[in-house]
Length: 473
Image (cartoon, rainbow, N blue to C red; front, side, top):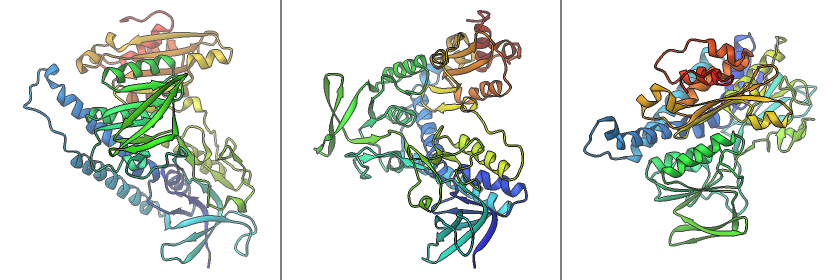
């Protein structure tokens, strides 16, 4: 017999389980189909484990520099296996938390590989899911609505496919038993620069090769320049405007060797290991899309503002639809889909309201659009920019590098975007994101009273600076 339900979710990652919880809260009978572990990439191979490693790396770097705070030690030793143990314990604890939430909300979880099937004796329309269980048996789930949340995986570079030893993706890098002496990172986007930062803090010699003319190609040029300056100051070699030649790859003396081109210049590079971090591709293969009328766009599932596919009773969310491949974006997309299929108001969201964070040292965060993007849209802009060196709490922290930039529409005075680089800006960006949602103006943000001394004061200063009224910069 087939299992019927109101909502089935194919994929139990962040977007999938959040969608399932909200559907259950709205009184729906919900089934999640997950082939691996609840929590998906974010919990097991992405956000959480990488940030755990980054925190250990940050603390190690601070302890080595403790004399600048008046604290002398007899030396600091890194025990990397214990770093990995701590990372895994955090992941395991959060995994148990997600499992508890499924029980709390009476959501049925079916472990297995799910494939969408076409019309059958179980359902007159596509959207039922055939699940191959671990024991080889088959189960059929027949939902009123289906949400596809199959996520993504690291994009590979032909000729440099991960071997788990010398060529790694971020998945394999997270499982390193020992730190290499050197690492060559192909790709200077978010994942690449985060790995560059943490490996450098752990004492690994790092080289980053990015094809674009700046690190973090999607971010503000000033922010990218400042990040590159800070990484290079720490000893990281950064090559922008360069591309590696996979056909030149070879092994020698148990090290990787590869050539890169930057303009007419040819550069020969070598390292103990090579990390490929050139983005992520959607998991849309082998899930039965050929049995539906669902359309794809450049390898991603095409959806409307309500997250509906071209089959209205089938929704898709998260990395498999492209756009901002962020866990919090996937969660919001899941909520949007569930509210719509439940007949409730579904307002969707705009990319400009989604904060973007990079957990390097220094951190990078942004929301909205940059001044360059605004000008490309034909808008006149005014900009407020304040350095962290003007903020007392930044001096107390010993981290005065970086700045906050606020971009506003000169005609309407609306805030168009905020870009930050500096201490703890991944925490500060939520204030700017709230201002975006509330459609605040710089003047309104500047009227808020910010506690002193705090790092958050810089947001008020940047808002005042838009009209030339900063008080401390």
